[in-house]
Amino acid sequence: MKLNLRLGKNWIYLPLVFMAIFYLIPMYLMVITGFKSFAEVDLKTMWDLPHGIAFDNFLEAFTKLSPSLWNSFMMVIPATLISSALGSLNGFILAKWKFKGADIIFPFILFGMFIPYQSILIPLVQFMSAAGIKGLAGLVLAHVIYGIPITTLTFRNYYASLPQELLEAAKIDGADMLGIYRYILLPISIPSFVVVLIWQFTSAWNDFLFAVILTGNKEWPITVALNNMAGSQIIAWNVQMAGSLLAALPPLLIYIFLGRYFLRGLLAGSLKG
Amino acid sequence: MMKMLRDKDRYLSVILISPSILAVLIFIYGFIAWSMRVSLSKWKGLTADYTWNGLNNYINLFSDPRFHVDIRNTLIFTGVFVIGSILLGFFLAVFLDQGLKGEGFFRSLFIFPMAISYIVTGVIWRWLMNPALGSRTSGFNLLFSYLHLDFLKNAWHTTPNWGIAAIALAAIWQMSGYTMALYLAGLRAIPGELREAAQIDGATELQIYRYIMVPLLSPVTLSALIILGHMSLKVFDLIVAIAGKQLPLDVPAIYMWQTTFDGLFYGRGAAIGILLLLSVAVLIIPYIRYTLKTETEQ
Image (cartoon, rainbow over all chains, first blue to last red; front, top):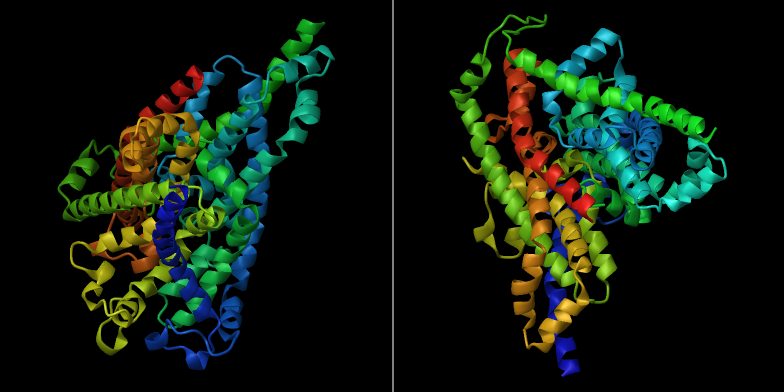
């Protein structure tokens, strides 16, 4: 009976493997095309494995995209660090240092996470040009500000789950607010920092809407540059595939090595963290 | 002394959080109000013009054939994307919840597309869904030829009227792992005793899912519906990367973009932005209230 039940469950592998193939097909195409030599590239044989490993496509894509890859890093790193630091501080105050009205403010901050950015795009552009904030600096600012809701939420939920006694004990010992934050909460917030840093890195890296409106072609991050490359008739599809892999690589590497934390950010984003 | 210290901390906490609150107040709520004002103006062209125009921008939109296409496309996209992601996510979660070997591997595999930009997804899928026929057949259509499934060959996003459904397929590829993760977390939260009790009462596996798991998972389904639904209202990058900005695949976000920044019809663009915001708010505000309420009850 037990054996029968076990055999009975193994059919589940069939749909799982089938779905695994579905999820891998686009990656398969991206990777094999990237490693084909120019001579081998033909839409008719697009599904065939490459005959050898060639780097033509990557070199070509990298030459075209390296300035924008650099731009992406220059923009994403400060945006991620600043918004994570802000989120931690806000979350601490909202969870453990409630001032009058803190519970009223919180849902208003949360709503900001879900708004369609089309509803603030015109003022944002007007504001940036009036304030003279240009290019990557403006993009960093946008990611920091519109990242406040999600980073605050993640940290608040984490700090709220910590027992209040932890703080009371420190207060009796004479620690003030900043002392409690610095010496008690900060050291145990590392996992939450990893979650938020990954989340912010990925969303800023993958963002297209803010990037395309706030930057000119010298400051284009990778998503905008890749989209323009794909829209151009001159650049072959094989180079586009190699470019896609370059653009996908940083968040994918993070996902491969820190997937657990990525998932937690994902669930927090739907208020389920 | 203690009291003074407490007061000092209280002020400090307000001072430390106020830059963020101020930023949210200005860049979210202030900007929304500003957009609303623009949507009620005659602003057209490069210089700002706040001449009062009443609700005309909104009224014109509702008689604008392009906006009708947008609404239709949004409905089709939402339907295919939300139902597809929920069904796929649910079944994948149930399969993965059976305690099979390799669960972790499959789970990671199903979620990884979430880490990738819509632009990257779009660039790959535009080649997968290449509609060219005859000797230039490629992508999925070529794969169908190999597998002798020629009846599946189709024009994908260039199918008249229904092209947007093909875009939703790419979106399902990207987001179904997320729904799976939501369901998996939900399934793991259901106490094992419930399942055991039902088994003792002689319920079959199918009955357990139908009468116990699915009803208990309804809050997860509701969250998934709302989150995916609000994403489909905002869809922009994916369509742009697959097909550029062409009329048959137009959605409000693209119309807003083109009419504002290419056509300089700021008033109309702002009106589309506000309509998008309102439709998202209808879904999200009750959701936030519900989530925060259940949180305080716990």
